[in-house]
Image (cartoon, rainbow, N blue to C red):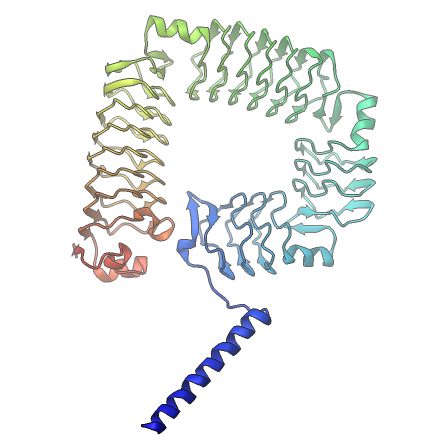
Length: 596
């Protein structure tokens, strides 16, 4: 007995010593345990990798099918190696910033855009800088902060990334032929930069690309309109009446932003586009004349130009961006010319003096709230609470009770009934599409029938319709969109029609009264968190056609049904999803039926 105890003590002593040694190696010798990423660690929306939750994983291989890596998707993760697959085109701002152990990065040739600071503060970037202070990936110059006082951009560069040189201590830059674009803030804050040579090949210059540099100040003194290769990049020092020269082809983003001294602007036919935020908050701007030939007005282009009272838009215009004239309180009338097809979200919102609006038959899309808060819309609503333009029902927000949509309507526009007091809606067979958030937050809406004629429905159509209990969809839809029934907490009954092939992200999120769901054969993908919070789900039918569930098990996160019917075999499910049905739902007591 004593020998046995002695043996046990010696064995325990040896194991303890081994564990202590292992702990010492890990803690004090900076050893790492290689942990590979699991599919469930990737949060993917559509084809965009939005976030990564495997914070301590060392080796990461991004899944096939991803086309873009989102802002700060891997920020601060402990990964040491990342493989980006062929097909990814965009790596957005700060995607891998702060990954202070990242030494190995494989970037495919398909990548055409790399955002600002995408690899900031990573060993990989430091190693690349040590090889060459101009870090170039697939023709994109992503970093040049350590390049020295005088810089020549090589001929193999096609684009200079956002903030590639921002605040760098450089005095002169020669950009070689072949470069086509200079990113946002690319040389912004370079306080010693006095000389810049830009070739004719450059056709795109981002916002504030040379802001706060001596070079821009010198050019502004020569001419307050700074024009490079037909791009008007800065006019913020202008005053009074401004006539854009005929050599200008494009007014850059933010070109006149917050220029409080200009009063009138004339834009010639040579200009093709007016950039986003181009004249934002030019509060003394009184009139704008846009000549024939200009095709687009960017998002927020004239946002909060409070003094703007006259706008002339000529033929040739095709689109007016989101909030383009929002907050233009002095604007009294506007004639939108023939040829315009798109009027963006809140394009004229808040123009309380806007009483006369002429809209051509060519317009096929109105963004949510395009004319919200205008006297023109108010007068329309007084005549008829259902405001219909070109067959598009753009506003029904003042409606209540039961509503019958006229047969003249072909589209229910974005946000058309949002937050209204409607209880029931009859949709005619003339309607073919329903826009984003068309019925969102209609707290009194109890039931609705979607006719066969409807072939497309946008995002969040019934978002937060708290009292919606029953939805009948007659068919012809191919997808249940993102957030379609988000937090419809009292939804009890819905039949997903045959023909649907995908169920979007958050589609039934928070439908806490939903007890059963049959996903029809033909559905191949289900988005992230699609049924999250559906705590009452006791019965689920899953088709054999299902091939992809975003973020692994998150689509049914927290759902523990009593019964699941699968359209294929047990082996088929396990091969496809890597779990048994019971394991997938983390419920060993559930009843499982297989159709084959």
